Length: 580
Image (cartoon, rainbow, N blue to C red; front, side, top):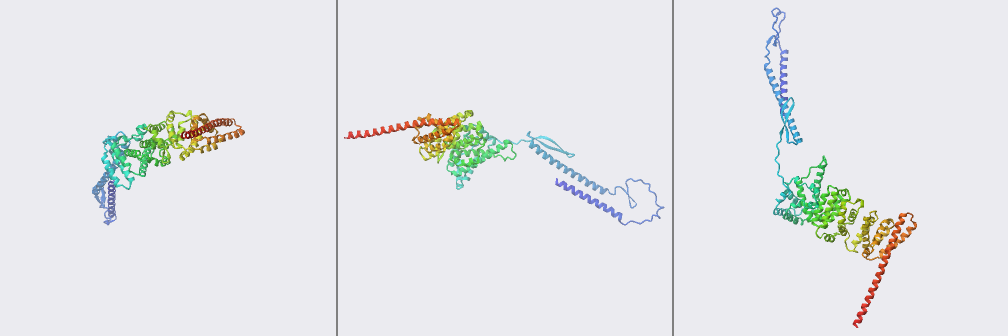
């Protein structure tokens, strides 16, 4: 196109130069030397011209035919023809470019497999027609199972041995190379063959937990996990954090595409996510404690706080529980249970996934024994006081707020409560735990929810049996929380036989009840509100009833002690008589 324009400009410049030369020649002829003629002398001899103008030219009184400049005109005509041809070539090239752009635009916007093709240029217009677009050959679809079946255990073991030597002091790089191996193995798997987000949302926990490791052979799994067990916890923690960030980035790209966002980054390749899930699952099963060290960072960054992230959080917790039930339950209480108190808790599918997982953990063989023995891990309780508080309120809602999931929570609650309260009676850790739990339990006991109040009162009474300091705390809170105090006193009075056996000593209880009676007497003398007066009288009646039971128990204990002393003395005397 540029060459044609240059040719046209060259020809035009040449034509202008020739015209200037021609004009210059005529001017020279007009202003040059001419023969001087005496007009008077030749006036008589001159003859009139009878010839008509027929296109001939007269120069210096010499008749010139029209073909005098024929050479010049022929040369000019030749230049005009060449200019015209160059202009047509330029227009043709422009039309071809427009046609090419039209073809590309049509191909990008037409899903029918047809494209446009330039037919010709006429009067600046382009004639187009649709032609069949050649279809690209389809690549064969490879499933996760097919790709996994081609992994050779011997080749993997050799590869792991090589990178262990090559990156001996760089375990982070070593783990990256480990992930690269599986990334290459699953490189032929397309996104349609591993739609992990949709699969997680549509699957039960029992099915989700095996994705995608159900396609990995036992030999490959053993070689991999044996090698993982030799890596440091710090390196594995960094690798798990990096893997989760990669998966969450892929999740974000799916969410952006679903919402039609314009500035969405290129989606991470789903084929790489197959390898990421495979490697991450093996690490979490082999070293589940890694997630405990990452939990503070995860909770602070709120990576799994959304409803869309919940299936992934359930999958991660399920993988950890496969390696260790205690760690799995710890993650469930710390990571998943709080989600039910937020927006995710209002979604039935979210509640169902969370419940499915804890039901799976508690139904595992010897789950209760394993969980009770591991209730405290490195000084941290598996079911924390805050976790017990959240569980208490979810399990015992108001009667009007009960849902289908309530019965399922009530089924798992006793075991989880037992894990939360287990420990060595009288130990420093148990005393501290009792103080922590007594705070929220006492408040819950005073709420206008009969089921919650009864259960919270029972937990508060347990706190009293574990730490005498809880009595002092109760005494300080008594007058400002009469509803809660009445609920606890009613529980103690109605179930005295059961609760009295759990108290190592009744002296703190007796002192506290006497203090309550004194406060009741003073408050009744000043009270004018009928409702408060009724509460004070009700509390005082329960205090009297419990004190009578305490006195009977104290008398029985004295009688039993006296009888024991008498029997002991009698046995000594009898023994002496026998020897004598």
